[in-house]
Length: 99
Figure 1 (cartoon, rainbow, N blue to C red):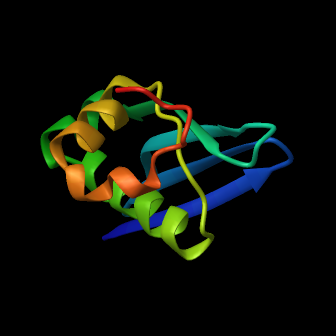
Figure 2 (cartoon, rainbow, N blue to C red; figure 1 turned 180 degrees about the horizontal axis):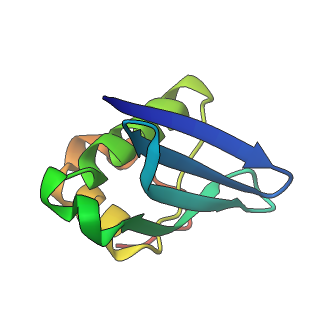
């Protein structure tokens, strides 16, 4: 069973995906001074790569951005590529972000 948890501590946060109670990967971010979230890393552990868990992590992150009315400044290659692929989400990009 897949479960995604969100943990935020001070200026950092991460979305963690668990499979049957085991951590399988994460998407992490830093909170920028302007309140935007700098998505700076996505990792799915080797044992879980075949399960395509990056997308559920990205979707949970996007849902969070929308629900909290936040913007993103992506530096993680996976998150950058997902925003380029899904241009309808461009309104979530930080105003200073140039892709």
